[in-house]
Length: 190
Image 1 (tube, rainbow, N blue to C red):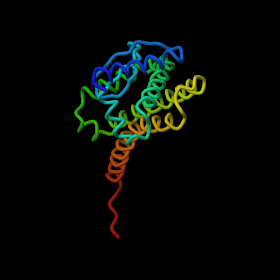
Image 2: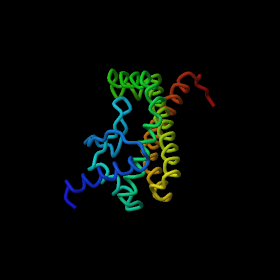
Image 3: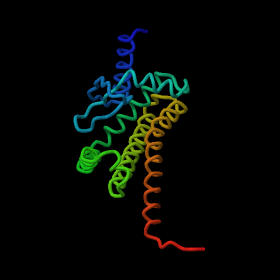
Image 4: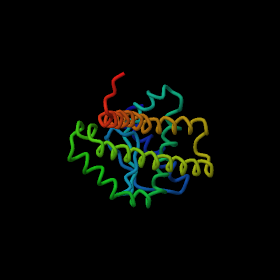
């Protein structure tokens, strides 16, 4: 299948999944390096064909490309169903964005208050991901779009990305907290 055919095929899978569950929103090809995403401000699903194919390689053929795309389409629609909560988080999202824009990576990871914001952002994102997957599960239960084994594997793969980043930053956070605590303790001689 050539590149253009593959892009059309992926677009059709996304569209047919939306049509099957009765939730059709705009779709855009976005070469962002993110397989699929939901833009809650502009209310569209973006997808990156190249990244989808890379993600499939990472999964080592545990799920067919068709099931993967359908599961992630359901997931992005799960975000769309949670749009009000996402919009309500916009102020906080902008705070995180401004902090990252105004502070170097070094500052973010060496200042307790800044890394606390990174942890808070991770926790907020994970909560939104869990809600989107719960909504996707409900859609899949009602419409039977993807077999459950493939759905769970796609879900686990998607959640792993968020959880790995969170765990990495949480280790740095805990180390920083520990170092600050150690600085405040008096030195004891044995």
